[in-house]
Image (tube, chains in turn purple, orange):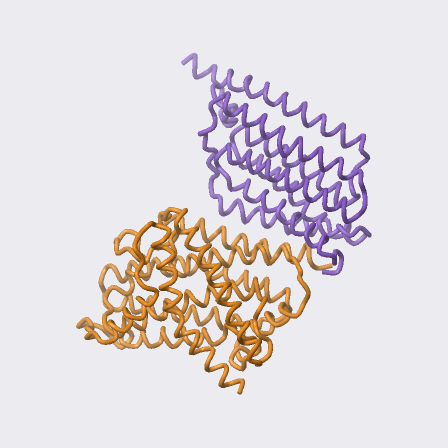
Length: 226
Length: 313
């Protein structure tokens, strides 16, 4: 371990690895409520990582970002999603993943891919957290894979939010965070997105009676006429 | 002197394996609000089996006769590689961790052959199940072990643990994942609850018991003892690789004493966690075992990946 030698630094690495790990567990998760809980856990771990980076690097503005992440992604959005799930009676829905093992091994190869892609960036960087850039890129790709592999609209939203988590994560580890104005703006956007998604859920359910987006590709009117 | 200590350590390892089994049994009974048998019960069982007449089926070939001896001696050899109380003992230096995995594979091979040899339905079924589980567990175990080997730049277990022992406290994310992966493999390989349940003789679920149904007398005693040694090896591996503190690195009496106390505390801790997990979890269907072991492989693979990505460079 050449880059982060202090015990704090090693704790940052451990937390970063755990953030990546929650992405893997989210991929394999088929229960919607558990998925939202895992998303909350990822938010909390991300906030902890940011706070530790702030302490190690002496950058107090990251503390504000960490608090924002904790409040928004660790508590508020998961609560909102839980409320939506309960409201629509989806809490027993199982979003079965076909071939979970192949999916997870594919995800592992995505990690290798993102390591390969970010290698030039890592070599240029002087920051102490530069090794985590690959992990954050992998978290981004895993969020996308979550959206591709799951079929429930709620899982898609969680995947989208996980991607947003990953973007914040990579901003923290590759530049010690974006300017505070940008971060506040993004946080507000995410909040608004969560509310709009909620409205969309009700719309989708009204038109196809389910949140299984595969059914969107079927032409219901033709079936009705026959 | 070193060789004498080495011999003592192996004898201690082999002799206390039934004690560990008895202790696990005791914890299990406590967790289920049952009366527990004495911790020494496995010794009594082994003694009883050794005294009993050994009955061998009529069509049994030499494989059936030889298998218990091979399985037991391989288990003892494997126990010689794993540092229990002290590191840098002579036999531990002779063989590395890949040999250890090879020993496990050798014992499993003969056990499966012996299960098939008699030609009963149960034996063949047990062998087939055992090989299914093993073929999935072995890559996961190797991957976890490679993570250790790559981090310490040696495949020798004793040398790797000695290096770990001498460095200052380091948190390695790769070790967290590799340790979890190895723990899952250990659960599958020693026949603990989510994968197998050796306490039951229900034909639909048994794996290990199905293979050894035809054995009796001192053959059965040897196989049971070997299974207990294997359980102990996995527990000691988990304890000493991922929590190496307290191992003796010289042959002084004080260091050895501390080593004994340390391994005792670590084993008690590990068995409590194991029994709690067994009490909480339900046994999986056999066809879920592949998901379980696939997850173990994924954890070990993540350990390797996080080592390459986060800890190097």
